[in-house]
Image (cartoon, rainbow, N blue to C red; front, side):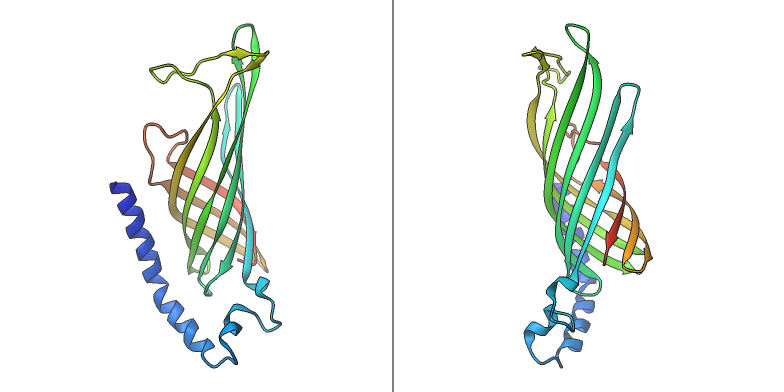
Length: 210
């Protein structure tokens, strides 16, 4: 409950920071020929206010394991600094485990989706708020939470669990024209002992028209 309250307060703070910017944008657009003009550029194209990106994160290399996540995203520029949109995530894990019999390959695919909000604090620094729901594929566990290797039809048995994640954090961006390269560090406010991920998430990515 405390973490949900903190997320609400942080979101409210972000909205407050954008209030003056939104008022300034409204004053500038007051002289336009119609209310709908604010949603379009000079050519009447609403898509000119969209930006797109992709991030790579949750990378892990171990002796017998590899993991990585790719996160495509798209958002609409509400003002010059504030934008909101959607993000999806595909997380892949490959692991060699010892079951019965012998050594087998174990692969999982996790799927996530949810809304994002970004606020550009300065040209190179932005705040990022994200809520996502993830469908995890994982090994079954015993009553004490220990993973079990169960072979069914010559494959390792897996189960599925759904978990929510609420990320807040900061990102740095370097622009080259309409393209940008970014790095961000996010923290999951809903972290618990049952979470499949660690609370910190370091992501690298690129964007277009952000």
